[in-house]
Length: 409
Image 1 (cartoon, one colour):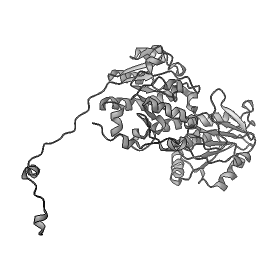
Image 2 (cartoon, one colour):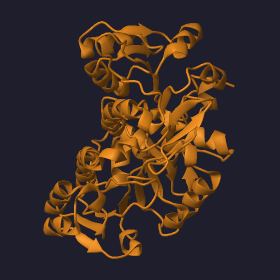
Image 3 (tube, helix red, strand yellow):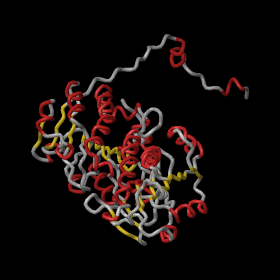
Image 4 (cartoon, one colour):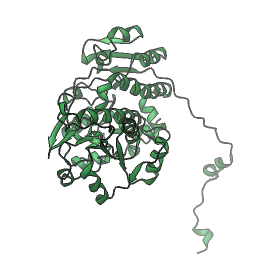
């Protein structure tokens, strides 16, 4: 049988259309969407910050969005209800009203009781404090079928973490000032001045990590006259921090032998390791802490991602420290809450442009299709867990968000 006889004849009516002019398809512009944004009052972890300050509310209201602020939400940051109402915010006298919003913004993770007030397809923007997250917490969010974004994992177009950046600046400055207080005798320390005076050597500060926290902590430490050692496995970061600080610093990679040698004589150790996905790795073992000087101070800024000291445990502003192996530990996850007004303005400045852009593109969910950095912050999506680390930690099935969001039509 010849090759031509094996071919199945195809009618010309089915193939002729390929030669005809095709209809041009144009991308449809998304219609602007006026958001309903809720800002509840925080009641956990001695949280004093507020997610949106009045100046940001004024901008959002001017762009047609509706902002509902719970009574007293800004008082701990010195923003009374009157200030919010004067710029167009609606003052709610109960949480239920605020939690009916399309977009709920919290500066602290919602409690289990607050999760009960959420509704399906709602956007929740809040931090994800990994040490206090439980499997019950994740499962309740899944049952509510909300889209939950973790503030600290949201990236900008450059791949940086803007919330982490500003909070790191605040944490670095505040941590070093806190360390200076904890070294004093009246606060349980051994009575050492962070910066030395004539005839008396200065205190030694060891900083783990060479990021933004380290840079701002180093500036304060050097300004007070302390001796600084910085450890990081990224040599580029070590070069960068020296360039930004403007002077030669004593730096090293995270060599266990060199690190242990410095910890033995350190007065202050600051943990400033940030993880891009899940838990911060443990850098200092309990055995190393046992060898440290009595009365020395550990400030674990990485505690909101699990902590980089094996002996770290989450504390609060009411009881910020505990002593273990004669070493003072300060492990408050929301350290920036001590300077609540400055911190509130910083967070609000980052969230406001995101909300404005979401309004122009059809909502937060529509914006997720366009911005990979924003998708990086999503950890639950309409009943599915999308964060790999949380899935492995709690043995819960997780699904890649890109597989769930296959179309924006």
